[in-house]
Amino acid sequence: IASGIIAIAAALFAVRTYGRNSDWHDDFSIYFSTLERTSQKGQLYYNLGTACDSLDQSTRAAKYYELAIRHGKNTSDVMANLAIDYMRTGRNSMASNVLASAIAIDPGNAYARNAMGNILEQAGNTNDAMKEYNAAVSTFPNLLEAHTSLGILYGLLDNHNESIGHFRTVFEKKKDAASYFNYAYALYRKGDRKAAENLFMESLALFPENNPAERFLKKR
Image 1 (cartoon, rainbow, N blue to C red):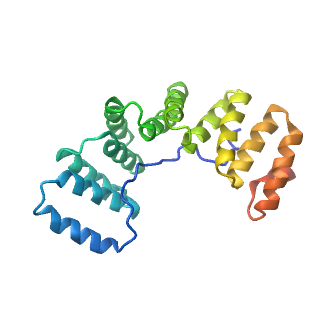
Image 2 (cartoon, one colour):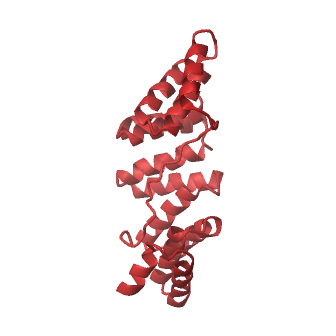
């Protein structure tokens, strides 16, 4: 199933609260000038971190999140963002420690739970990873990354009903080539070939370009 599933389980999804569509260079200038005269440095450093994340500057973003935490912005969401940037820059051990703190502060932080699941899965600790993913979707049922991870892992355990259930949830929320394929492939592995083939064909009609369903149907 690992080669069949095209959606990557280790999807990383950070909490974002900064959403301005403006010139980032101007925003950075504003933040730095404000830092000199504000007492809310933690919030400003947090905003700088999210701005860097929007530019895919994970190393720089992590430094600003660290400064935000040092200046009192030590919330579960900030820690989750910091941990995710640690993961993106290959510092999983540090990320794990920060995520443990984030979850201790807010056990219902679904993004922190999902990220912890990613780390545990990468380390080969499937059982604990699944516990974290299940905790994530229990708190936030629409966290599709966690459902995808659970669909993959339950499939690897040949628990087809659970795998199908999680992939169906993703499929119902987000109909794209990947969700079609994963849902159809899970049905195929359970033995429901007719339903799977119908989904593969429907997927090809909707997404004819570079669709893995076409390759799968040719190989089977």
